[in-house]
Image 1 (cartoon, rainbow, N blue to C red):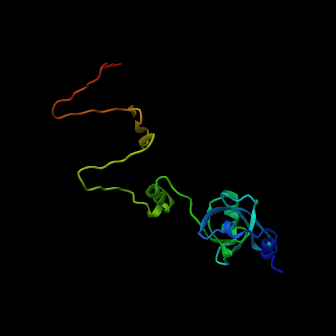
Image 2: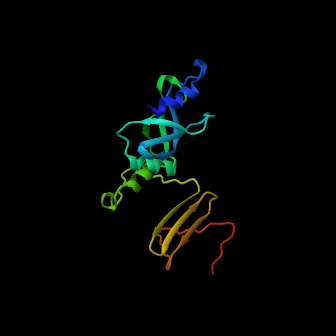
Image 3: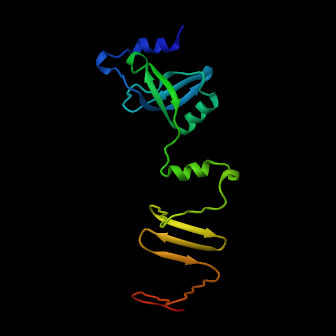
Length: 170
């Protein structure tokens, strides 16, 4: 007896509802015997029992059920009630290069950054913060620059200008 076939017999979809292209979805729960229940946008039937590849690790499937990362789905014969989990997808990162660096073990992260070029741009949507011990430099989206430290030293070999609508000293 095939449990997936039993589910499909009760919910066969007419030809106009067939899903012929891959679709994104998520794991709802993992039951005994590697039973994987999924859902996807537009599904009005509730969680569906899906087929999976034996290559998908059971531990990763359980993690997917608790964190709901996306899965790539196909549908046997295009029937919406016959999902097949093709693979688990890694979460999308807003800053993929930063995420890739943070994912590396600390022993692989360079201790120094040398950039050759005429201009280096580091940007952040809300703010950029450089920190070292008790010193920090914060650049905020509204144009505020906050420089903090135990001692601040400002030197110039030529002219040292301080400009502002108001300048407060002490």
